[in-house]
Amino acid sequence: MSRPLFAVPQRLLSIVRCNPVSLITRHSSKMSEQQDSNITKGADSWFNKYTVVETSPEGTFKGVKDRFNGITVDSNMETCSADSFPTILKRSLEHWTDSKNRGIWFKVHLNAASWIPELVNNGFQFHHAKNTFVTLYRWLPTEESANIPPYSHTMVGVGALVMNDRNQVLVVSENYALIAGSWKLPGGYVEPNENFIDAAIREVAEETNIRTKFDSVVSIRHAHGAGFGCSDLYIVMALTPLTEEISKCNREIARCEWMDVNEYLAHPNVHETNRNFVRTYLEYKRLGVRIDCTEEMHQVLKKRYTIYSVAKVTADGASSGNSSTTLKL
Image (cartoon, rainbow, N blue to C red; front, side, top):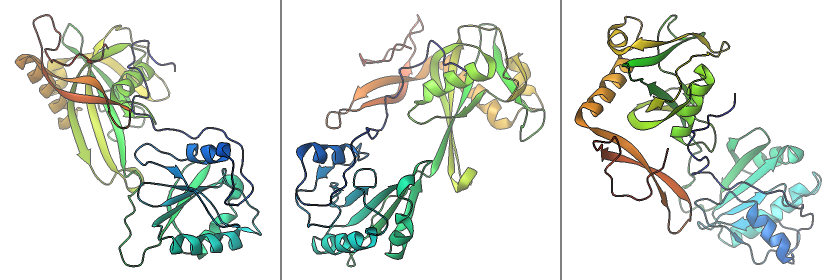
């Protein structure tokens, strides 16, 4: 289903992606400036600062160096045959050990999957994988413990508390609900490179075909032991409806309706946590506050951030925060 017209500008927190580049097939200390640039662009360099390795012995992988003195080799950037890989890997590890490099990373794409057994036989461990690649690492220093950050360990979801002018809450009952027949708020998982507000607006549109705009963050629920052994972060957003006619997604939703808020708070098929989300939002309105969203630019990384903070609501419904970068949602 298409995204709503009133969505927040997307990818404010997007990670730099690899650009298609020419493959490097020669392992030598002499590479062109364009090849050096291509290797650097192949690094997922949001927080880490990657630089091209200045020199490397003939017959070794070059890779890029991060700010922690680690090396990353991307199989799409530097290629070699399965037959020559063991020799090149052995020479490279010897060079990296002598150079006192620390974490060694191999990003191995599907077309180089034959590298994986040899990497494992040389002490590499799996770190993370996606549809088209797996990343392995080895910590070289023997005098210090491995200082490798864990891969993403938390699944992030959003819930949307949509309330109209008649004090009705938009509620759904899912086809495959954990508790059959229970009523909950629309919502789902945040997609890659999607901010929380945009995710909540999208989920409401997909499940009910109702367009909305942002009002306030309401609550954050944190739990452990979710899918794939991950922790679970659930962020509830209050949204204002711009349309009210429901057209539910039959694949996901069994029932959907506007329910009077007092009925919702007393309904036996509503989980107490969901009732608390509504109570919290009603208390925000009574106090005249909201958790607003502003946009800032990191002065070093030159990346945009969305910042959530408490703001006082003025008589005309606007936020009284001093920031001039408040998102116009």
